[in-house]
Length: 57
Image (tube, rainbow, N blue to C red; front, side, top):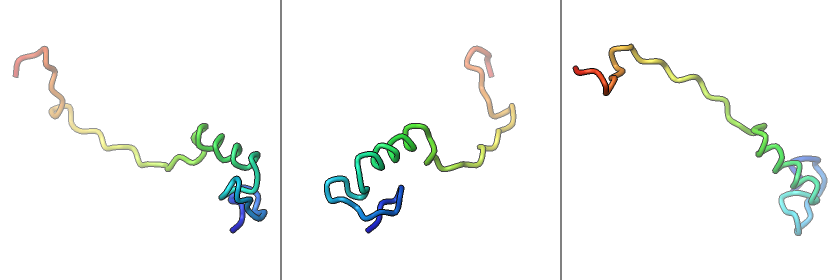
């Protein structure tokens, strides 16, 4: 198995990474949102679907 960051052989101590550095690089990517999955924006409903609780029906 190779490190997903640098492609070196993994170290059992840091598996699936080869070193603490690569593990930290991966963590930083998660924390900054680099691994975020893009999503399509949700469709907006009509204004009729929205209900203001302050106004009577």
